[in-house]
Image (tube, rainbow, N blue to C red; front, side, top):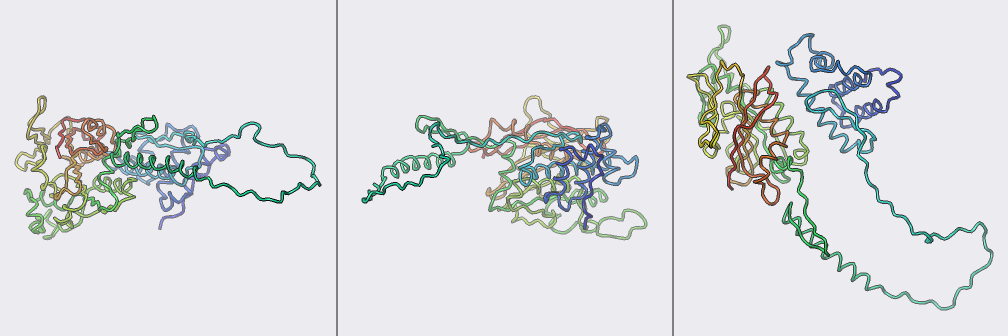
Length: 451
């Protein structure tokens, strides 16, 4: 069990600062309950910023002061700060959308840095209904003792049937218009009492996740099998899906003299990048409203790919299920065991594109390749998202491209369907591997699939 969150002891001026009081509210909230490290992370960067020491905020210092990393550790090999920063941003967004809606300030950790930014909360417009002048009668300061005369006859109130007819005449067309716009989807328009009403599309960078996480349908998130990668590396053999499912890869060659014959492929390993991607996926707002599960690659069944939405993380060397969809894909990844090159193949190159994009062991540019693809599942009753890379840095670049969303939405915008759903697609990316991470990526080529 995690220990209770303890904020840094603020100096007197800081204790009276409304920005620091906001941080106290945040870390004491239910959203940040049982997240001691994230609370300490937020407290550390905010305390440094509010006391004029923002120049001390960097990945190295955060790792040492918040996550107990040893002095001089290498952030390029240990990306815990970047992983936790992503979780912190998601928690802050959840807090201000729910518990913290009444806060007057907002704190944001911008992507690409760790120095927090404080902003005023957006003002919510509350309609004010003012009475017309003269409609308020003055209140007398004296009490009259006279009794008003009450007429002996009571006039029966007339039924205002015309009012109910008027309400129905307005309500029925309004309901029809709303139903029509909802059915036709974003971009649909209709004329109503001289007004042109248009169904506003939702944010385009969220459409991919709305397609993958739907109410009433299970979404399986499948990280790669690092035990399989270990087997392939030690045996210098590639394993296809048929062999993987048959259990032929359960015995791994001896790694060193002190090892006995083991079954390392039976161990349930996955990479830190795959784990990071899976954790980010389940924290998406769309995933929280749907039925999302993390399923280990070796536990997946063929039937799972027929009726569910699926997210496959990793290339087929770690996630052989990718092989099922490669016959429908233009871009495929292959690890050449003879030359030790990793090859991204372009089956039908367009002008300006290469047939092969090769990642060689001695490449001084440290290039890596990534692929993001959305395809139908085996029964075409759901969707399959493939997020793969030639290295862990490639997989990280592919996931960053999907999570960031704006570049992908811009790329797909001309092909988006009438109701806002994205088309089936493939996007091939190139990135640079620095310390096991991927700082940025660029689009090399893409394909749009017809339904």
